[in-house]
Length: 150
Image (cartoon, rainbow, N blue to C red; front, top):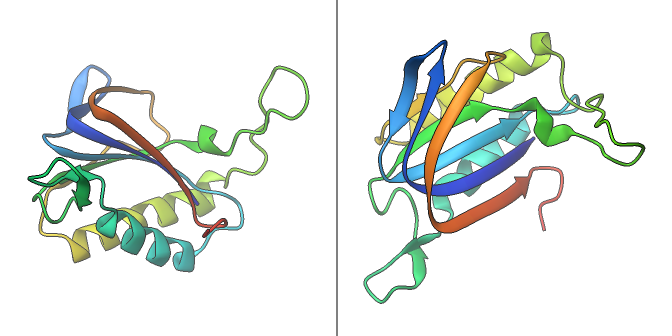
């Protein structure tokens, strides 16, 4: 499972012109679910992302987590995080999980995130054509892969 984490001062997602989810200060999480992902990947990622210290403290050092600042989350499904560009110019997505596997894991990720956080957790719609708007704060963008826990 892959996450592209962006620290934002605000973010929103529209589906068919209507706002489906929006947050203020917090984390925008793009979630890519691979064919070999499971609940264990979700457990690890939820713990990792909720404890990630990427918000500035009073001294200006990135020392606080989203929980510490009472930040919010916006979760967006994005199968393209599993794109392979090894051959040619057209990415291959064969490593991305099929919807019948990915949707339950995406929903479980959101449910688990909500269960460990008192902050707002908003989301897009899996598989929908979404328009995501954000103001990247910093900018801070971090890539996390549950299969590469270094």
